[in-house]
Length: 92
Image 1 (cartoon, rainbow, N blue to C red):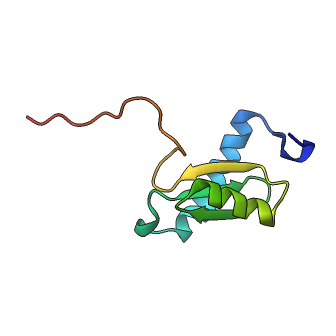
Image 2 (image 1 turned 90 degrees about the horizontal axis):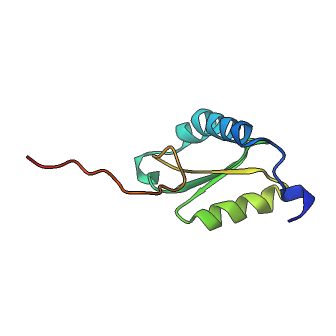
């Protein structure tokens, strides 16, 4: 890993910055049709790319900002990925 791509922030600061930019800049620019797509966000510049494919969003952002510190979020979710069982409502 090159020095440019090594994390420069604590996990907490990384997440705080990423979520702040997502809420402030990404959410107002996406709509219901974008739900499930991925937002790759540079936590230093605020630049972002949204795409159905997370790798494509990530790579497009790196083309524009090669030293980007990228936070990934899925539109319509608090996370990029969900691990563990999904709770489904039981029918009565």
